[in-house]
Length: 91
Image 1 (tube, rainbow, N blue to C red):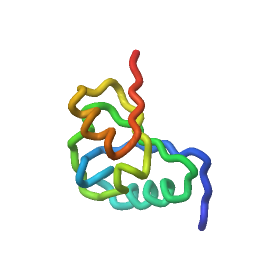
Image 2: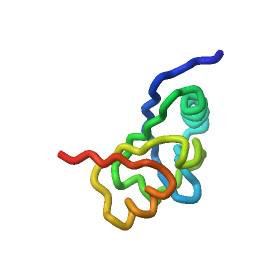
Image 3: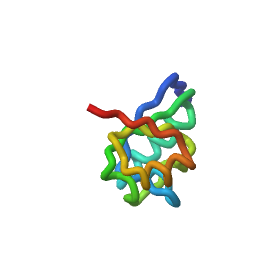
Image 4: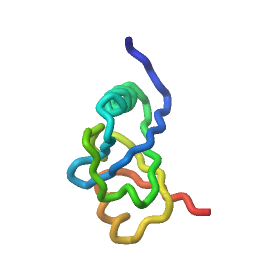
């Protein structure tokens, strides 16, 4: 079945410079991968604790989605913003 999405919002368990977006469940990873491929825009919603983390299954490279997160340290922001767009949300 082929779905089409305008905007895709995904949560992730890991966001890593080398391994990209990851999650522990293979079935969940498959759904997220397909959704990101068939969406016009993909956004990954994660908090700062997910950066540098790696889970079992890769969903995609960092460039497949824009990241929406809380405020990051300047070092982490600089490292990751070279591979994708990051939108920090503050309270």
